[in-house]
Image 1 (cartoon, rainbow, N blue to C red):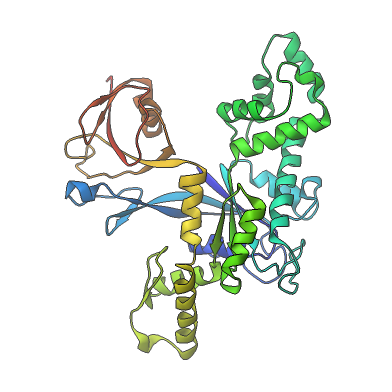
Image 2 (cartoon, helix red, strand yellow):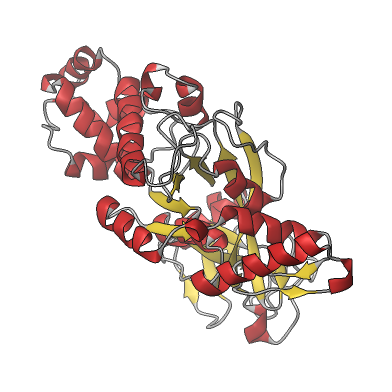
Length: 398
C-alpha cells in the first residue's frame, strides 16, 4: 500500500513528507526543489490488542508505544505538478508516471494562497487553494484518459465482436495503475457511458470514464498546509469549495521541527499530540526556546499540527483500511517463536479471512481451511469479513 504526496511546487509538500518519514528530502522556498520522487516509510496509529490481553506484545513490523501500535505506511513524494502536466509541462510526465502505483493521494495545498500556479511566492490571498484541487483532478483525469488511448474506439469494437466485456478492455489498458476490477466496475456504474457499446464512446465519454475511474480507485485528501498562518474560517471555506474531498489543516513546518527536536532528545513529543515536554531547558538556545513556544501556541490553537492525523484520515477513512493481527496460537496470541502479536497488517475493511491469509503467505491462502477468532475462538469461514483489530489464526492444510 502506497500513498502519493502530490501538489504544486513550494506548498510544503516535501516538508509534510519529511515530517512523517524523518528523511531529508530537499526543501527550499522556490519551485521544483523536488525533481525526483522521494520514497519513505511513515506510520499510522492503532490501539494494540495486547492491552486487552494484559501481556506485553513483541512487535515485529510495527512498534508499540504505551499501548499504541505504529503500523508502517509507504509514502512517495513526487515532483511538483503545474497546470498542463498531462501535456508534459513542468515535470508533468515524470510526475504522473511516479504516481502509477499509488493507492490514493494526499494533495498538499498552500492554505494562505501565497504561491502561484507555478509555485512562485506571491502575497498571501493572491491564489485560491480550491483551484489547485480542481486542476489537479483535471490533470489526473487527462492522464488516465490518455492511458485509455486515442485508438480506444477501434479496440472497443474488437472487444464487442469477440463478445467480451468492456471491463476486460479497461483492465488491459489500465495495467500498472493499481486500479482493481472492483474499482473498474464501480466506475462503469457511475460514468454516463454506454457500457454495452464502448466503441461508440466519444472523447467526452472517455474523459468522463477517466474521471469515474479516478474517483473510484484513487481516493484523495487535501492537506491544507500553513494553517498556522491562516484562520479556521479559511479551512471551512476551502472544505465548502472542494467537498466531498475532505480537508485537514496541517502545519508541516511545526511538525518537522518537533520530530527533529524529539529525535535530538531536546523534547518529548508523540506525533499527533497537542503538547510536548521540554527535557532540559538548559540545552536550548534562546531562539530554540522561542520557536518551541510559538509551536506550542500553534498546537493549542489547532489541537496539534494535523500532519499525523491527516495521514491517518487518508489511510483509515479514505482508503478504508483496518488493522489485523495474524497469530499461530489463538489462545496466547503468539507466533511459532512465542512472540505476542508480532505483526500488524493493514487490509481493506471487509477483507475475507482467506484474503487475509494470502497477505500472510501464498501457501496459507492456497491451502486455507478456516480462521479462528482469537477473542471468541469461533471458526471463521473463508468469506467471513474481518473486523478492525481482529486477532486471527489461519488454519491450513499441511
